[in-house]
Length: 333
Image (cartoon, rainbow, N blue to C red; front, side, top):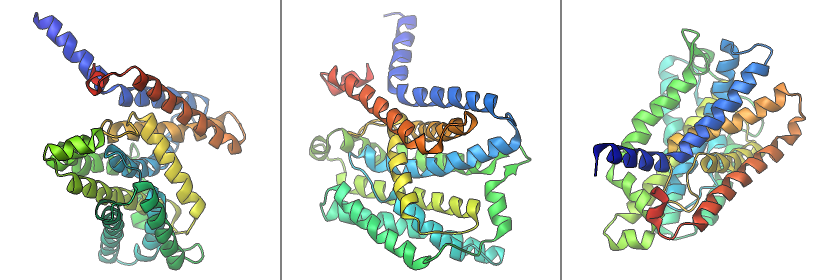
């Protein structure tokens, strides 16, 4: 076999295994280009920064959803953790720089605690992930309401402005935070033993167990990290709004949109394939839909319809492809 043919096969394998993220990235680029073309201010720094902040919010919640989905589960509590940590951050992210740093640490730790609880209930309680996280999500919503019976908060404006501003008026800092999360959390996790185990569990939990894969630890870590990503999103929301609100509708909306972003980004709801990179592009693509509705002066109430259509098309395309798969290895041919 010639070297050229080998390179061609390698490229086709790479293209097949990354078609989800590539599709999501192309969709986002096309829609965002149309958005800035039609926007009165064009691709100004303010427009880019606003779009980046909104997209990063959904991207973090969607990354939280991606990890359980990879194991073949689903986390319906990510929106509630997002809202709860927003309410908590609106109470703690105030005062001196030292107090702000302590508040940030507590907010992120609270997300980890929520993830630990989800993991314990799903893995060791042996409950269906949908039922378990639906119940824990209601608990987190109750905590959010206890923390913030009414909207409000006392937030350090300098910290909030820094988190939602731009570096040298060019690069939105929310994108820096998002890239940092990918480099510091996602990539090491993806290459770790438990990260690879999560893919194996999602492909076939029984086969993974028989092969000696640490199934329980892999699933547990996925839910723990999901709580952390949702907490980062809650912290960012606090910096954007300078307040916290126990808004159950907001949590439900972000949970639904996170599932849509996961699907659009190429992660299979059956588990075992996909990743956070595609999910990020999927999240930004979905966020751009709302921006397009604005610039084309379409009724914002139509946005759920557009999101539903996009999700239905993405799921249908994935299902049609699965109908042609005779062996799981065919997914990568």
